[in-house]
Length: 217
Image (cartoon, one colour):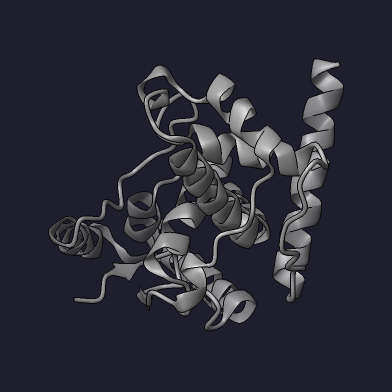
């Protein structure tokens, strides 16, 4: 049974497993020792081949969704900021419809064509950037009833819309890959914002980051 994922109105997306999902990237021998020193103790008994496979897999997926997560996170954060200033349920619902439309215009069918695995990595990175789970997003943009039923459907199929991000344990390699990308040590698949709304959200995000850095520095 195909599982349904949401990113607000990247809404109701069916993800299909594609052949490219198993075309893992090569890892140099020096990465093996590096992985051993960074992985949690519970992983130490795995073979080198398992390390390589897991690291290849993680790098592939993080690189493939990194820019999507940045754009989607910036848009969702911008929407959250605006929603916090709106008074009245009717006005909020009206704005949420606009937000859904903006997300659809930005991403179109791109998210719908992602595999379950890529969608999972994407939602983890969105949570890392925004603190919002897939469940939170569905609840905000489609209502608590829809969120409940989709969570139930996901659980039946071995998925969890309430899944968060654990950089110290389960998601350690994801966090390592993100840090490598952000430090310029690893390339990733570029995806620029296509719509005015997305570009404005990215600019707003950069300005907020600069203000935060200035306060802290």
